[in-house]
Image (cartoon, rainbow, N blue to C red):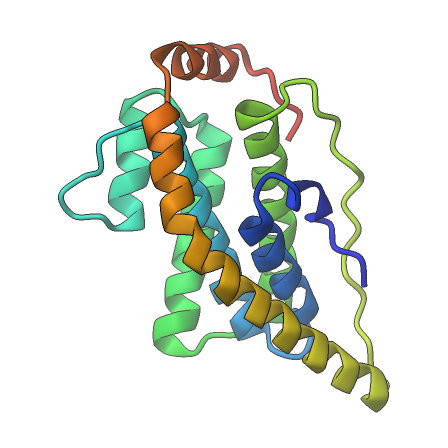
Length: 195
């Protein structure tokens, strides 16, 4: 199955992998999908902190990080609401075992919008998003087993990418420039993006 998040693969392979894992599990394990989408949002926020060299809050929760980004003018309202939705769903899935195919499908499409916005603001302002394609349910047993194997492979790739991430984020922090942050803030104010 091709992923809606393929456009992230070159620049942010970890985000692409999390999006792909979320898509693959919608119907078989929606709980995993909700958790992976929350992880996607958390990782994206970490990139934002690194790119703009924003000082981390003392309490490094996702809610506090989002609050700091809003205070710095780096989040438009709609993106803030998507991050809130993903965080609440992830917490419910992780702490209460919650699962819902409908919520998983909705949150996957919201995460796609978040990914498009991120690509436009932090990489390519004129990026035109591909059309979102809702993942289809697969019912044949052999195909389900294949999806599970693919998910395991993707999970292993994710673990390898996670190891590389810390130094990558430190590198972004070291290269962050005030000019780039100012340009992004202006684009956000202008409503540049088509998420």
